[in-house]
Length: 108
Image 1 (cartoon, rainbow, N blue to C red):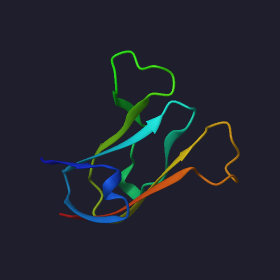
Image 2 (tube, rainbow, N blue to C red):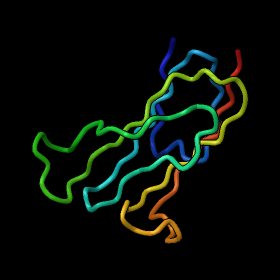
Image 3 (cartoon, rainbow, N blue to C red):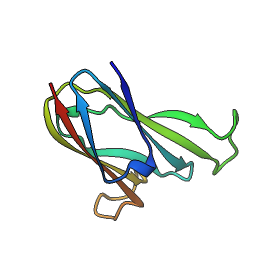
Image 4 (cartoon, rainbow, N blue to C red):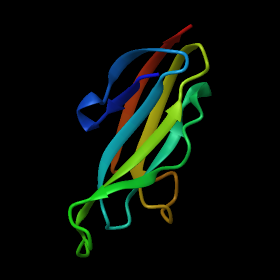
């Protein structure tokens, strides 16, 4: 099945996928403590992010990296994906540094 790659430029977009397709979202982050965290994903069940790449093999402090979320799309229906960039130790009541959203329509 095909893999649909999404990046920061797809923020706010509506995707039309088929059950069995794969969804991969790659988002940039700096190593200043901010991490992308899934806030909502409907029934898509996106797992926690993993490092996707760095700007160098041994990135210097503060250098950029990419975080990737990837899952096989199985649940038919419309799913709102919300991912926030925040520091894990800060309270949830504090506004996120950035928010990324996708609306994913899955058909059989």
